[in-house]
Image (tube, rainbow, N blue to C red):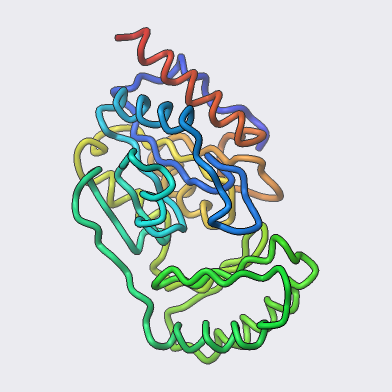
Length: 254
C-alpha cells in the first residue's frame, strides 16, 4: 500500500463525510500530549472544510473531548474522544463522557508508583483510557510493556492494551474508532455520504476496516509496516496540503 489518495478534484464535498485523527495526522507528535500546538492557519482550514461539507467533518481521536476543544478553540467540530467512548455528535451539543473506573484507577496508581523515578515517562489519565507515553524515553518501552501486561491480568475482562508509535494504552475492548465512525454515519449530516478517514496509528486500523467495507476512502499517514488503509500520505504537511486542495475544489464547485 503506497498509493496516494484520490485527488481532491475527484471528490465532491456534498458526497463526503470526513473523519480525522489528530496526533500524527493533523498535528506532529510531541513528547508530552500537552506540547502540541494548533496554529491559526490549520484552525481556519478545518473550519472552512467543515463548512464546505455542510458540517460532515469530525475528529475521531484518542484524546478526550475536553482536551480537543481546548486545542482547537474556538473551533468546535463533532468529536469522538477516547476512541469512541466519548461523543459529541454536533459541534455544540452535549458530551457523552467516560469516567475513570476504580479498577483502572488502581492500575494507574500502581504503575505511576512503579515508574516514579524513571525520567521521560508520562501517564495520561483520560477517564476510561490510560495512556503511558514513552516518546521521551524509548529505551524504557519494553519494561513498560512488561509491567502493563502484568497489570492487565489484574483487571477484569473487557480491557486490552494497544501499543502505538511511542507508548501504549489500556482501554475497554469496545473502544474502537470503527464504532465511532459508524455512530456518526447514522446521523445527519454524515448519513448517506462516503466516509473518508485519515489516521496514522495502530488504533486507526479498525476505522480503516470500517471505511473500506463501505467503499469509502482510508488514508494512513506515514505508514510503517502493514496497514488496512487503501491509500497513504507521507506526513502531516501532506495532510494539510490534501485538505487545502479539497477545500479549493469545493469552493470552485460552488
